[in-house]
Amino acid sequence: MWKNVGYYNGNIGPLEEMTVPMNDRALYFGDGIYEATCVANRIPFAIEDHLDRMYNSLRLLEIPFHMEREAVKAELQKVIDAAEDSPIHFLYWQITRGTAPRNHVFPGPEVQPNLMAFVKPHTMKSLEIPYKLISLEDERFKLCNIKTLNLIPSVLANQRAKERGCDEAVLHRGSRVTECAHSNISILKDGVLRTAPTDELILPGITRKHLLQLARDFGIPVREEPFSMVELMNADELIVTSSSALCMRVESVDGIPVGGKDPERLRMLQTAYLEKFHRETTPV
Ligand code: PLP
Image (cartoon, rainbow, N blue to C red; front, side):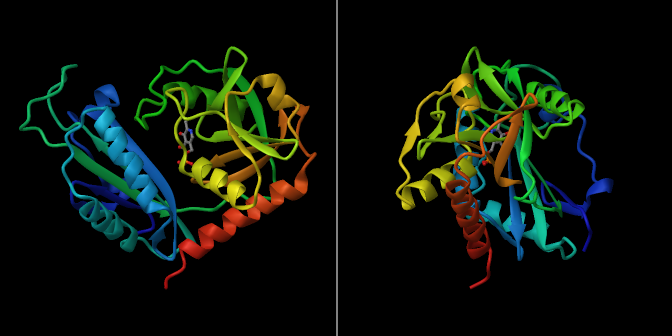
């Protein structure tokens, strides 16, 4: 057992000591896709949703990954089971197009994709401490619906957020809000939950999907339509969702106070999400 566990094509060991071949196409092109989720009681949360999205990303990038769903789950479970105890773990995995000499075009059919994963201890963010955001123009390309390894615009956006003492960056294309650097964003306005539609401008977040379902369960109307920065700033509440932090309230954007006008509805959704997480990661 190790605190941080690494996995590469069947080999498991301490994460810090694992190495990958220099010709893995992730290193030259970011030519691969990834997934991540939290784990409690050694049960990965919402694994089926993550595997659905994983296979969809692979299909969209034409990566010929033939490992069956149950086999992927079994490999990931080996990584989880090799980790030292922790109340929550973070599970990350990625699949690249394979290992081949650097060449932009796809390698031949003899080259197999590479499966890499790691597990490490994770601490969930406290729901009591709201997020501070900065806003930035969304400069990403238009394949944001695919969870690719090409994350430079998100890296830069998160760095800018950190430099300004913030937790996340909310991105917009012109006035239209898309999502955050590594989260989705939704708003509550007049009792309605609003969030950007799942087109090529945003990642179809698993947490976003669950949040919308919980809202519908509570009878909260849901509108999946573009909304503007002005609407964001005037929203009753802003909710940032991601697998690593679940549902976070937002207290400011660019230093300007936002939200705080529908705390009961927001708290109801946050609590329901946390309950769902614990229910679905409790052994039966
Ligand atoms: N949007 C982007 C760009 C992300 O990178 C992520 C998570 O990594 C999300 C949204 C949230 O997705 P999920 O809720 O599936 O973690």
